[in-house]
Length: 107
Image: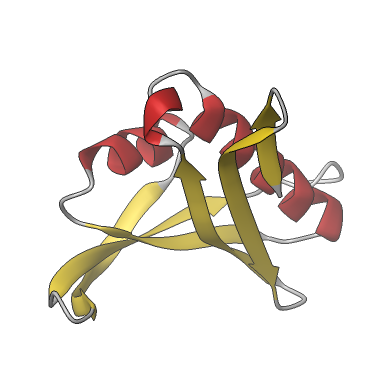
């Protein structure tokens, strides 16, 4: 999915669903629009879509040094599960694995 302003793409996001869990594949915001809530709107839309699909949890990996993304995910309620060593290649940068449990309407 994408976010546009004046017919220009200012953000994008993707979700993968395996029939049980959803995984955030990407959330990106144009540098000129970072800090303006675009990433949060896109993330909220991904979580809403995961709920619609019946996902029980939303998972993601994020670079350990990506402070804006870590703040975004923490503010949305994601919890850190663990660290994946050397996940981002070729930089050999670690990633935090994170998850957001979803409560279904009938829970």
